[in-house]
Amino acid sequence: MEKKRVADDHEVEPAVPVRVDRFGFVKQEQNSAEGLCRSRSASEYEREERRIRKWRKMIGVGGSDWKHYIRRKPHVVKRRIRKGIPDCLRGLVWQLISGSRDLLLMNPGVYEQLVIYETSASELDIIRDISRTFPSHVFFRQRHGPGQRSLYNVLKAYSVFDRDVGYVQGMGFIAGLLLLYMSEEDAFWLLVALLKGAVHAPMEGLYLAGLPLVQQYLYQFDHSVKEHLPKLGEHFSQEMINPSMYASQWFITVFSYSFPFHLAIRIWDVFLYEDVRIVFKVGLALLKYCHDDLVKLPFEKLIHALRNFPEDALNPDVLLPLAYSTKVSRGLDALKQEYEKQNGKQAEANRKQG
Image (tube, rainbow, N blue to C red; front, side):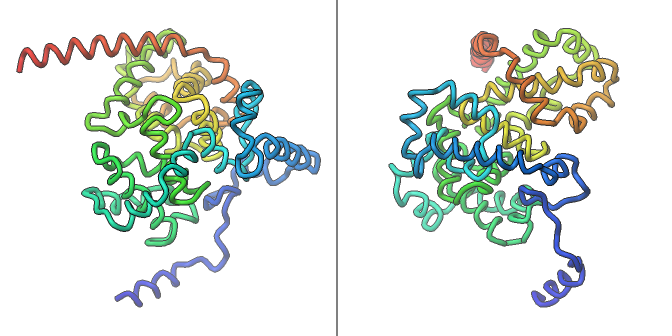
């Protein structure tokens, strides 16, 4: 039976090698962003090399100078991260800015223990979802291949490490994204750093029963749209559109699901350094960029548009400066307090009814 399947696989295998973009995703068609990338001039390559040298100097060997540099010149670090971390250094920098490198060093052997010696109640769910994670990337395409095995190991280990969270489907895209830039063990500890809050507020509420943090973020986002884009907010209300219909995945996977990869990783650069505010900023920037079209659409077309943004709206060099110029911090803090107050009252009312 196994031989027959292998033979069938060979029959459908294309005669020419699979064409992939610079990130390892199989090309469906000529992508304009990729075309721009391949036609870089010598001066652009030279500029990129200079940028990499600056980053290497800032980081030091294996990250040895990072903490010293970030204390001395935080504004420089922030500016450079917003411009985009060089891809060849991205994995290391992500570990440094997330606090995961420290967690790894403090917990030798823990990951291996979780993978090899522990069992998880989520194992079948993880196996079922593995092939849905970045299916067009060469690392994850092969059934039971090294990419799928690594992804399984990281998700299984986390589901054992934190049994309250266990495993939720959206976690696969986060773990998958991390595995494209680092080893299994490094990806696991970065997942821990994010969900447990090594540097920023813990994200585990995105995946706990009832998705409490998702509910809070959607509440904050809904009110932010009404504040920053009142005309669009009013149109959404009239058409009965709320953020749960289009923005849940933005928060659950931090734009790693269904958004162009070259945009997702730029958002992740900033997200790991500056926290979840960048998700709100990018979401608002997307709506602002498409504002004039969105306010004219009826319900069905509006839903489709909010799940299928035009290519020009997803250009990092256009979208991210628009996002950086959007001020949300104070408003989000006030909305969080408002949400917690309302939720507390609701919980109290439920208790009394019970």
